[in-house]
Image 1 (tube, rainbow, N blue to C red):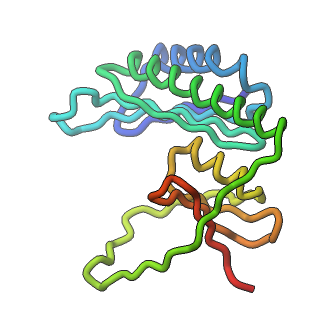
Image 2 (image 1 turned 45 degrees about the vertical axis):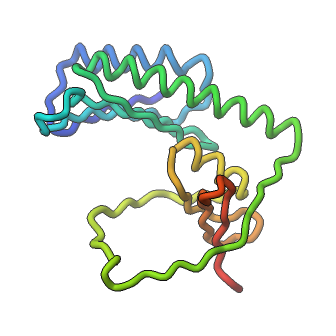
Length: 182
């Protein structure tokens, strides 16, 4: 199991790094046996109005999913304890969904697509660019991955069609699927 510990806006002492690796490893090793990589990122919020300004984020890269959790505390030890509990719950939820999926065929309700109109006043500036590897998966796997990451949409290569698609949460709690036309 490979651990990568990163920090932003703070220099971490070795005791925090060792504590984080030990704590997270103990939480996840009983559930995840094929973990490719685990990243733990620490950051310190500089805003004085934020009481819980020590943030810890854990991202686990497995062959079939990316599982992520983040939490904050008054110190990094508290943040690690909180995020450890969260990541363990995320892994359990993922494992349960995979077990349920293997027992019965999954059905995803995909509603009709809605066309959005955007006025010139509503256009916003791009402030962050995120690059990631797009893996082929079914829409069901993409919806599970989206839930695990806590996002409202997810970009993926549809394994059935071979085309780049977007799955998203609708206001009625169902999912929508956007695919390019042939």
